[in-house]
Each structure stands twice: as structure tokens, then as C-alpha cells.
Length: 276
Image 1 (cartoon, rainbow, N blue to C red):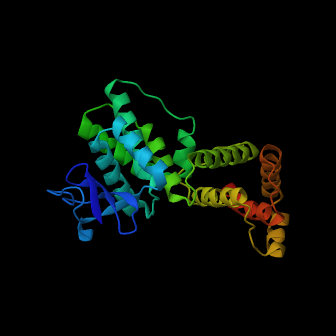
Image 2 (cartoon, one colour; image 1 turned 60 degrees about the vertical axis):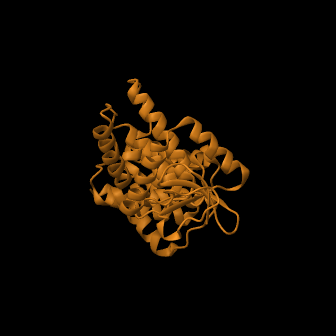
Image 3 (tube, helix red, strand yellow; image 1 turned 120 degrees about the vertical axis):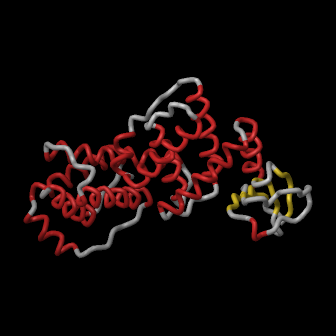
């Protein structure tokens, strides 16, 4: 691997033996090096491949908007997030999270804040990610001295969720979160009560809904024993009715044809949260 440009001692633009350009990070990897000199592979802790001309263009544009400290900060958060959450984030998160952190700190410096209407739902749907993001915000608040609101945690969560999926598309991530929100709202209206964030069965239901929505968006079909599930549906008519409401909503709003197996599987999970 050869150095193209040292951004500082720990961050550099490099080219591997296949001529791929990437951002590499590691303690002291670019120290005292000149362009064209080799970078020790053993010092590289993280690498972000820049795909094609657009990737290099995005990175060059990014460096005009933010400081290198923001890139290092994003890298540190990504590394800790992967360890804590068990994620394997795709390369794009370095660019998007660095950009977001730069803008977030600039807003905080000027006392400008805004939240997302999905904040409560993100907290409920992605509890472990939200807890990690809250801790990140608290550390940034202490480190910078800025009054960074806790609401910023929701945006950090979305970056991790987006980067952990095979397809890098924030719009799809937001759409998925919105659909889950609607499913939860239908369920709450059907049962006439709120759901506890700390309830184990509620957490399992939300996890199921997340994978259910992803299967629908990707056109995947759930395989399950229909006959066994039908017996449960007959014993839980109220829960089955709620599952049908969800199915009709998804068909009317998104044109999804939810299979009988998915409806019955939803019934099983709805029954668990209805008992608590």
C-alpha cells in the first residue's frame, strides 16, 4: 500500500496493490511519510475504500466542509460502535457520519437544534443502538463543552443502521423505520394501550417486525408450518384481526401482498405482547 496524501499522522489517502484508493486510519501510520512511500499494513486499523471517481470526489468534497478531527472522531465512534453493537459497517459510514458530526457540532456551537419526528420510534425499535448513541452524545457534550441535545442520538442511530445493511440507502432505512412505526401504531390502537420499552416480548415483537419489513422490501418469502400457525390464529382471534389490519394497511399503502404465513407469524408475536 502506497501513500497518496497524509491527512495527519493517523489518517491518510492511500492506494493498494490493485490501484484502489482508500482512506486508511491507524496510530502513526503516516508519520514522517512522503507521497509514494509504503504504509505498513500492520499499522492500518481501519480502511474505507473509495469506489470509483465519485467516491474520491465525495471524499475531496467532504474535506472542504469538515475538519480532520471530525473524520477521526467519526472513525473512533464507528470503531466503538462496531465493537459494542456487533456490527460490520460498510465503508460509506465514514463519509456520512463525519459530515453529520461536523454539521452537528457547528449547530451546537451556534445554539441551533432540531430533532426528528421518528426519535421515539427509533428509541423503541433500536434500543441498544440508541443507548450507545446517547453515550456518544454525552461524551461529545463533555469533550466539546457544547450543549448537544440528546435528540442527536437518533441521527447517529440511523447512520449505524444504514451502514450495517447490505444496501447503502438512507432513504430505505428511513422508510423501513416509518413502516415499523405505522405497524406499532396500528397495534397500539387495536389493543388500546401503549407498549413498554422494557418488556422482553415487546422487544421481540419489534425485532420480528424489523425483519418482516426487510423481507417484504426485498421480496423474500417466509417459510413456516402454516397448519400449526393456523391453530394459534384460531385460538387468538383478536390478535389475528390485528395482523389482518396490518396486512391491509401495507397492501393499501405500499402495494405489498403479505403472505398468509407472514400474517399468522405476526399473530403469534402480537399474542405475546397482548398477554403482557
